[in-house]
Amino acid sequence: MKVLSAECYGAGADLFELNILEHLARTNQDHAGSTYVSHLVDSFEHEGPNGRHMCLVFKVMGETLATFKTWFPTHTIPNPLLQRFTSQLLQALDYAHKCGVIHTGNRMLIPCAEEQS
Image (cartoon, rainbow, N blue to C red; front, side, top):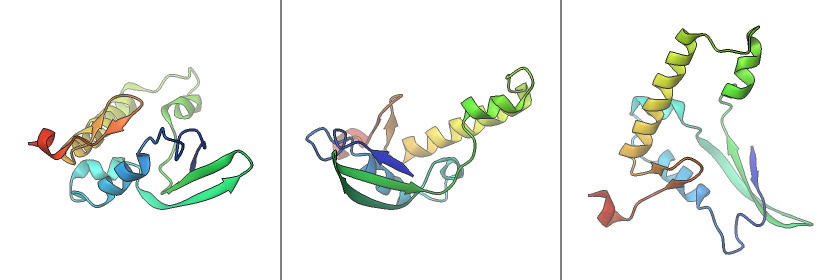
């Protein structure tokens, strides 16, 4: 689960993360890269002492690269595993691109209909 801070969602500075995740969930699920994208299971709002928070619930995906490398004595991921990860990452990016979503590092954007042609 990911909880967005009140400053990030609903306070005039929306990240539109929920909209993008919903868009990905209903677009081109047959693409091989769909498997490697976190899929939204549910979402809800929580009103707390610091404001309204958007909560995003995902399927469990597994380790991050930061924690996965700690499994190895030198904290270095072996090349065959890193190559597999890279292949899966590229498939996920291709899936997002074919869905009209642009990943720019920290943010994902859905271009306007005119820009998608």
